[in-house]
Length: 121
Image 1 (cartoon, rainbow, N blue to C red):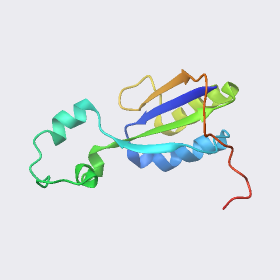
Image 2: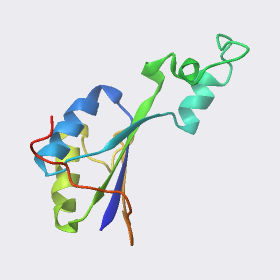
Image 3: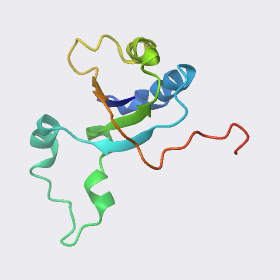
Image 4: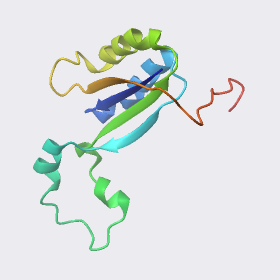
């Protein structure tokens, strides 16, 4: 069992990455907004448009400056090579800068995870 964590730099490719993952058999993933240290220093550190009492969404008012972090738990590690290949078909070679970072971490136990019923809406 593994946790796949993918930091996607180009959020315009999010839908295509998710579709590629589904084609590999991934039936669920969590997507979060992110910004890295480099982008934060370049674009966000000197922002003066944040309200005095900001909401969480105020920090994401410029989505072009943010990427996405996707994660999913796999109970079958055999699909990992196909998942990596599918991801690279969408974003390009992960060995190149700004295409993203994909990590696979071992998971010893999971609680609360259930398979999606194919008949659910």
